[in-house]
Length: 83
Image 1 (spheres, rainbow, N blue to C red):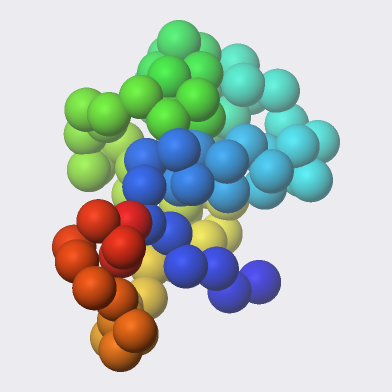
Image 2 (tube, one colour):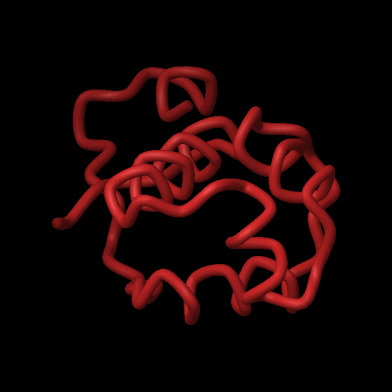
């Protein structure tokens, strides 16, 4: 799987989909990552403000990683077009 993630909502959706694919409840994922179920819920629904260390623990539990690649913006007219 390789997806471009540009918003907290997109990241939350990816984490949600992977959690469901693995058959984990929010509480089970929270327990494995050392956080609370409410934190998982907030991340999955795209709320801003998640701590980076929490996100990295979730990604590790779900066996996902972050890769950086240049963004293609050749046809963009403004910064708003990028997002």
